[in-house]
Image 1 (cartoon, rainbow, N blue to C red):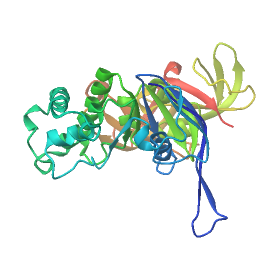
Image 2 (cartoon, rainbow, N blue to C red):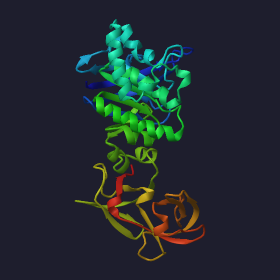
Image 3 (cartoon, rainbow, N blue to C red):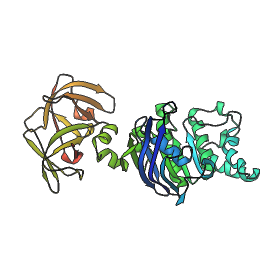
Image 4 (tube, helix red, strand yellow):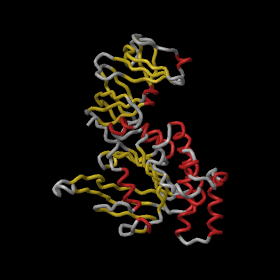
Length: 362
């Protein structure tokens, strides 16, 4: 089932001072296709959870329209929209067994016990919960409880599955396992899904598309590749992962954009359409796109290692460069082969322009 938001806005009014208003969501327009998984991503207070709650019916928008499968649902209460929410707190009943928790929604719908058992047994097998049917939630691990919450949501066959930061209560390793599991299950059932998180890695793992939000507005909507490698503005580039920003003058625009940094001119094939000749452009280069070596006149920058951290699978460096306030951040993903640099070492920094992306400096 598709989901469509048309010019959705939510304004909260201060109960103590009616003159004070706060716009949590501002003119959001998005269409989510059937079977697609879209993540709302952004910092705390950006409006992502409020937008999710508007779709579910737990919150009413100030203006704009919400459509589910082409049906206008503005006036439908949450329990009539046929959506299921998976919460970060699991929200499973402690006094019921696993199988009773999963079948609870079907029981509320008036389904017969034999039919409930068939549906519950099916979903427990898919979720790897078959041997846990008689256990209470207190006897389960965090990951198992999350599977129960997910199974309960899916067994109701909702039109749309909603995830409100479902993994934030799990430890790092379990989070990694569960986000892969959630994506697998979502694709297996083909349920249109909307996922809210502030974790960039989580968003990249589970999503077909990501909607990055800030201060209630959409900053970019695109695939994980587009969001990470082709950010449309500095906020997105800075929020998703880490990036180096190199300012220069746009001195040519044709099949590629030419940027002059100091006395050096480089051509970059990837750039945003709002980049203008004669204006400032910003080269966005991710740390893993940089190559370190000996200082030389052919290096893009020469500098000195000011910080180095060995992480086993990678080596991370901060490099001080004359004339730059911020250090250059570089990552070596194969330090054993590429060699190690130490604090105080002089280094040359180079990169392939194909690895970079140019955004407007205005």
